[in-house]
Each structure stands twice: as C-alpha cells, then as structure tokens.
Amino acid sequence: MANIINRDTIGDMARRAATKYGDKTAIIFRDLKLSFYDLEREARRFANLMTSYGIKKGDRVAIYAYNSHYYPISMIGLAKIGAIQVPINYMLNAEEIAYIINHSGSRIFIVEDILYPIIAKDQEKFSTVEKWGFIPLGDSSVPEGFFDMIAEMETMPYDEPQVEVSAEDIVQIPYTSGTESKPKGAMLSHRALMSQYHSCIFDGQYDTYDVSLHALPLFHCAQLHCFLMPYLYIGATNVIMHKADP
Figure 1 (cartoon, rainbow, N blue to C red):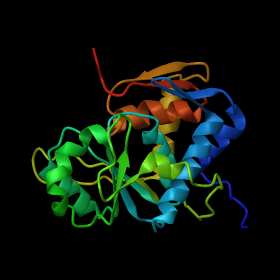
Figure 2 (figure 1 turned 60 degrees about the vertical axis):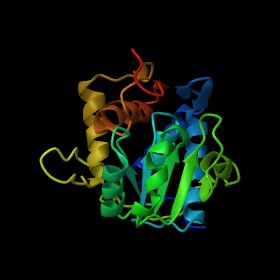
Figure 3 (figure 1 turned 90 degrees about the horizontal axis):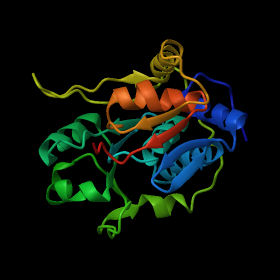
Figure 4 (figure 1 turned 180 degrees about the vertical axis):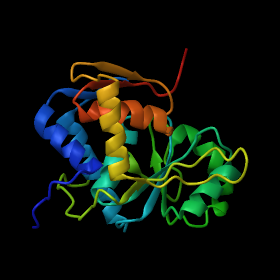
C-alpha cells in the first residue's frame, strides 16, 4: 500500500486533527457526539462508499440537505478521494436544482429525507445523475431506486483512501444565486479553502477551547468555510443545528 503524503488538503486536515485531538468532541448534532477520531473514521467510510459506487478523482457528488454531521463528513470524505462536493441550496425548487445538478455534471445526488418531496416528481429532469442517495434522519422509508447512505456507510471499511490529491485540485463547487443570470459554479480548490481557514482562525482569534454554534445553512460558504471547517481545523467543539430556529 502506498504511503500517505503530507499535503495541504482538506482530507489531510481532518486526518491531522484526528491525530492531534483524538477523543475530544468535534461535533454535537442532536443527541449525537462525534470525536475528532470518529469524524475522521466516518469521512473515510463515506469516501470508501463513494469509491464503491464508481466515484473517481474529479467527479461531482451533490448534497441536498439541511445541516447535520453528514455535511462535513461528505465534504471531508470526497476531499480524500479528490472528488468534488456540490452543495445544493435547500430553498430552491426542483427546476432550479436540476439546472445545477446537470450543469455541474453530478453523478451522485444525495437527498435528505425531509427534502425528498421537492424533487420526487421531477427526477427525470436530473439527466447526469447515475445513483441516488438518501439520508434518513427521520422515520422516512428509503424510496425505490435510492441507496440508504447511513446504512451503506456502516458496511464500509475505515481504511484511508490511497488517492493522490493536490492542493490545487477542486474540492467544492457551490453555485451563485442566479439573480441576474443563470447560477454559476465557483470552483474552489483545497489551497483556496485552506487559505480561507488560516485567515478566519487568525483574524477571528479562534481557539481550540471554543464551542461554536452552527445554525445558518452549511450549503452556504459563510457557515461552512468561515466557521465550521476552520473550527474543526483547530480542534474546537461544534454544535450543529438542523436549521435556524429562532
């Protein structure tokens, strides 16, 4: 097996955090607590699940969900195999979502159970999707033709993927709102986001002993890349709310 090379990438950031902070609590979501070690293991499982479905370096995987621990898990897991997360604004309608999915060329589309009805009648519009994933956070049954992401992850090994990933590789493509024209995908590299995290940590004076509350949507760069990911970088504890609830 090839040796893992130290790189300035998001997948390696999580691995180093797990090594440094271990059993310290990384994420609290509802009644669930994940340590930094747990987060790294689950990200590896997600990476291996995507690999088992044929996702390779450079492929796009779209995530349509409210906030949960699965957002950073999917982000980090895809980063480990050089694949790209496409976060979907949960306030869009099916036609708007289909444009982003098809324009980005997303091969897998993962949908949270509570959002499934929005796209259920329009699945034929998603022409690039080869496999459909389902996140059953509630009591919903998995629709026909979808794989149960949570159950499938539990069958995956914890092995670190052996993929050469460069800091210049694209790790996420969030889309603009499209208020003046069609939405545009912003191609964010590992290096660009790691630089963003360094700036947030330094200027925001983030500390390992901080506890940060995340209520705004993680599909948006502000909550994900200005707060959650930088705080994971430095070993802080993060409380994730499913969605904003005043």
